[in-house]
Image (cartoon, rainbow, N blue to C red; front, side, top):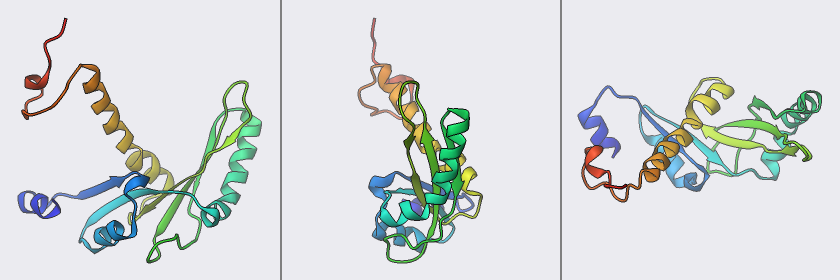
Amino acid sequence: MIALIRGSFPKARIRVRLDGGFSNPELLAFLDGERSVEYVAAIAGNAVLNRKAEEAMSYARGMAGVTEQTEHVYGEPTTRPNMDRERRVIVKAEVACAEGKAPKDNPRFVITNMKQTPQWLYEEVYCQRGEIENRIKELHALEIDRTSCTRFWANQSACC
């Protein structure tokens, strides 16, 4: 697919966003080998990542204790994730607060080859993956079944 995109749009920037189910060493190695392909991929937390994120989590807990609202702090723990080579890891150290419930730690981790700030990468690049999924869910709310035609209106079912 990358070759097809490059063939049709040679100057296009290619950016890949992956949720944790797709983050595996083979795919990340492939993406690392592709020239000018940017990626942001979620990875599951583990004991090492959680330990490295503890300073940011502690800070987020302190902020949530004061504001009594969900707080998050972004950072870059220096670590080598359980992968085949060293990669840039970003943490979103979040403490979620809900009325009537105890605050809950919710650390999230992503791997990237991009250079921007951790907060910008997480909020403006990685989280946009979820926004695309929301648009697809909206189409399902319109009772859309399959999209055989490339034109939007051709795929709307006649309801009502």
